[in-house]
Length: 411
Figure 1 (tube, helix red, strand yellow):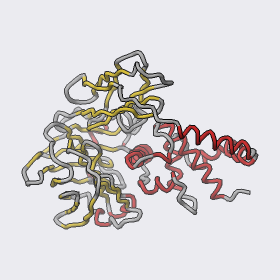
Figure 2 (cartoon, rainbow, N blue to C red; figure 1 turned 90 degrees about the horizontal axis):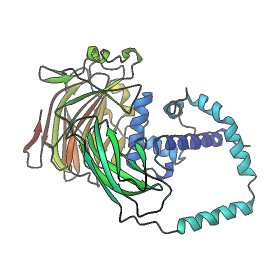
Figure 3 (cartoon, rainbow, N blue to C red; figure 1 turned 90 degrees about the vertical axis):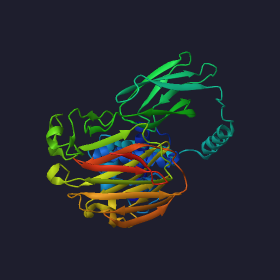
Figure 4 (cartoon, rainbow, N blue to C red; figure 1 turned 45 degrees about the horizontal axis):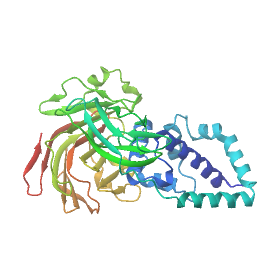
């Protein structure tokens, strides 16, 4: 007879496969750091629940002796449109029983045959796709939405299926044909994206797609459609500060009472050319409840680069366990690190400074050094900035300096 933890693990395995199919990331055991980060953000955007990278890693690897917290399981279920974890299990009870029954009665000879087939399949050489041609061109020089035209040639290969994916997000993947040469894709978010060409689920080529902005782009992250944001047309600059007010949000029929909307500010263009391993960034910001912040206040500030981003999260002091930071490819979670210094009064202006010298990071908040760390993997040249707020937030200033303390960007 299975114990409750064993049964829960079967349900967790099943829901992870469904999530993997939803975002087209392949088997959960093959997910990379960036996949966990992006899934964490997608779940938080859709459910309002922050599951840290470390939590998602433990779940995908079944690295737990006790059943994960109900809040965690509810977030996974709600992400794929179930009411909660109980609802998901109720809809899949029969399938789990059938899986357990079939597994118990599989003959040993069949198991041996399956293992042999797996070994033979794994031993097959990986197809080389060195002759693939893959490039891109933008329909307009900057701004979003932006249609990108992909030029490709895969006619020299035999395969079952091929596709082009906009970036890390597997939901933005489109099938392409062997004898065709062009495919278009609409980018709704700015950034330095890495478009990927897949043949029979093997990623064979990757190219950069740089979607820039004309100054600051103000965005409301649409609770009803996370793939397509709401672009704010109103002037959000007041007294040299940028802020999307609740009144402006109301103009776009966003229900403020649901307490789940986000606002974001992008600045992505050729003005950024600094090295992400050697720079200083300073900014002033707040997320005031009097000016439209959600009940659980929070802010995320990102330095966008060629191959990823550095970011820090700040919140009110009661929510620090949900925070995490990223520098290079290194993640620091509030679940198992003391990030209490990143809890602050967001109703007032805060001043943040991030200084990186030869991959050694120093974070200063309101003139007090609060954190120091280092990382190994570089993420290339700096390409832009991204601010994300729970509800309405505001930016006072943003300044970027290179390794020689020269001003690279100031707003």
